[in-house]
Every structure is written in structure tokens, then in C-alpha cells.
Image (cartoon, rainbow, N blue to C red; front, side, top):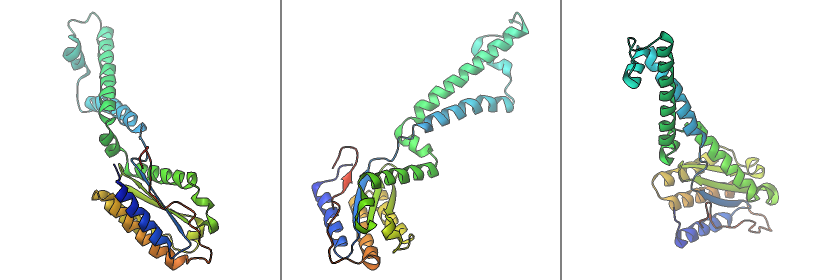
Length: 232
């Protein structure tokens, strides 16, 4: 998603305004996605390749039909019972390979892959991506450990708010769920900038209550939204 200069400026102004009444530092990051979920196509392909043929057999599908349907064999045509069994097994394995390849191709499509990825795994990947960004941008190095990162993953439509230990000691962890919910609401409506501004504004209110400004209150982190994936 493209963010216009006006969107960027609006978010930066919201951060500056929110930080005016607190010693906390707010940092915003927008990622196109949190993960590629490359294991999802393989997991679905392997599972269906194993289960579908076996399930058909358990449901009453006769193994001999495999030879008649796909191999042109019948019991009367088979020289020996071993040849019939070998032909059926060969076709069975071929079916498994075909199911594996077809499923992997279908599930490799981005939206399908994300939809079939378990919700818990998607949440964990967004959380991990947010933590990586928190550390890589040095939010844990702010004076008094008062950095707060607001992270959004567009493809997953999920948000994470990570506050450093100086914030957690002062403000209850539950209040940051409100911030994340405001951002998610914006993501789901396609109003990403509005979501960030609402989340930033609420963060500023929380920080002003629990982390008042110091006499020396430098702006330690950039106010501008960081866009991953080469944009921004």
C-alpha cells in the first residue's frame, strides 16, 4: 500500500502531539506482511496427500478400481496377483504425488496461503516481526526505557503494541490492547492512516497519565512512519 506524503505528515504530527505531554517515545512501523508462511503449502500438501487416498479406501473405495480406472488393468488381465497389487500401489502413489503438487500450487497463492495458516501462527509471526523491529530500531535504548512501538501488518490485518519495561512498570499492560484494537479497526476498514492516528492519540493519553514529561525531554526517535518493503 502506498502512503502519500500527506498521510506520512499526518502521522508524524500525531506522534509529535502525543509526545508533547509525556517522556515516552512513540514509534510507528507498517509492514506489508509479517511472514511468507512458506511451511503452510507444504503442510497442507503433505496432509491431503496422505489423508485423501487413505480416506477414500476407508470409505469403501476398492483398490482394484484404481487399476481399472487409471491403469487399464482387471483381475482377468493380470498375469499374477502380484502384478495387480504392484499396479494399484503405483497408481496410489501417483495419486498422492498429484494431490501433493496440486495442493501445494493452490495453497502457494498468497491470500489462500494466509487464509489457511492457523490464526495462532499468524498472531505469533506478527508478534515476532514486531519484536524484531522494536530491537532493530533501538527502542530498548531510549532514556528510562520508555519507548512504545505501534506495529501493523497489512496482509494479516493485525497490530502489535510493544512497550519497553519503563512503560510496563508504570502503565498496565491491558491498556495497550485498546491501542492495538484502534489500529486493527483502521486496517479492516482500509483506513490505515486513520487507524494509526487513533492508536497514536490513545497512546499519548496513556503515556501522559503514566509517564509524565521530564524537565529534559528530547525527541529520541523519529516521528515519521517507517514503511517496510522499500516504501516510505
